[in-house]
Image: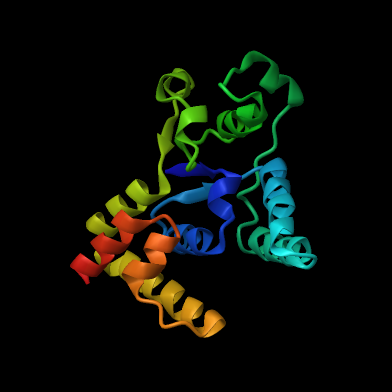
Length: 182
């Protein structure tokens, strides 16, 4: 299954690390466009003067780790598409061009299921999708979640639990499922 990942899933860090960690297990193939990566870099400016620089470094590592993930499309593809927020049409265009099965986004209102289904796509909420992955493949997914928690503890010095970190990362059902299945 190919899933185009929206910028709001790639940034913030914990959500991105869990999603891409699950992708590394082979449960799905991640995709993105250059514009989606640029949105991530611009959003990271909120972290302060070094935020964008750090994001661009992380993007370079991401591109090296997933060389086939980047989707490009002809600009005129956007002309025939419609979404409630015109600024999100590029995401739909990239999903179509990449023959994606789904768009993973936390932005449900701007990606109506009926519009996506007309293009043969569905919308994947990260929390629900990851919860399903954990329930179907606990032996693959639980180590990913644990590695993300351990890295968060190391970087922050905070005593994160799986549930507390996943709740903060807007993945509460996923955290609960992994904890229950572990």
